[in-house]
Image (cartoon, rainbow, N blue to C red; front, side):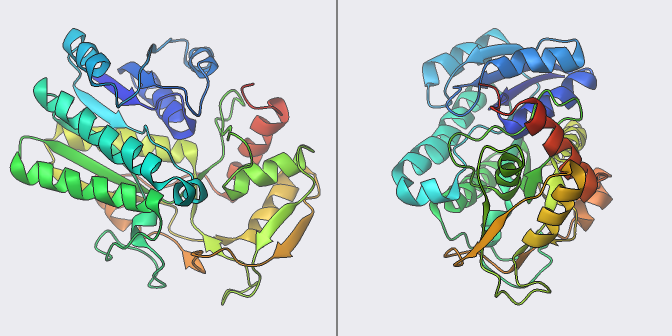
Length: 336
């Protein structure tokens, strides 16, 4: 298939592109490089032996998008492009709504114009809000609590309405839990700009000596060790989920929603211990006050993805930490 991947040089997008190329698909990446590097394209080629087509393009640039879709009729689009930092979204809500929501509307209008109606959307478990009713199934009520999560939820509603208006669309919305890890080659991985917002890259940077210690936000949650529990999923497992979603698209699936997670949770302290074992490094940490809006426990019910996509997470916590450490150790400054 001819696949257009938006945000394909980002953390999850780049790993998905590797899996797509290795499965024999023809891939075109568009990315504005606002939070990634073009060097990723070379790394993807080094892993796969195939260089994906790359075009620097913003999803808000209707003229450029229109030209790209006119020149090459894509069989499907996988949409990763978007701003993704929860804290930053609170500080810059208009930027998040404009980029994520307006950008997706712009993209879908161009795709509709060119009759490209097979679409996989990178959604998020943040659409489930702060509920303690775990594990989350796809039927769980949605209630995002920050602009990032709200932008994902708005896009879900838009895509639902788009499908209702025109059932020729085939749309798969994938709700990710907590992607971690890196490609086992150590050539691509998570390279956050500035201070990491997520646990694993922060632990990795402490291990490599880039940061002095980790802040653990709260140890008084109603969990076995008092720290928050999350469903961590290896980024390669997540990438494979997109290949399975393409199989659904080829079956003219209509509108589908799937959780992609391991179906179990690990606490912050468990992740620290696992990373210390994988890296052989001590991870100093300090207990600080809880962050507003952090849930005690969040993990997926991935039964539906297992039944319909024939997908399940294969890589455990040891592999997640091992691959994250290899990436960080071999690329202490990321792609810089």
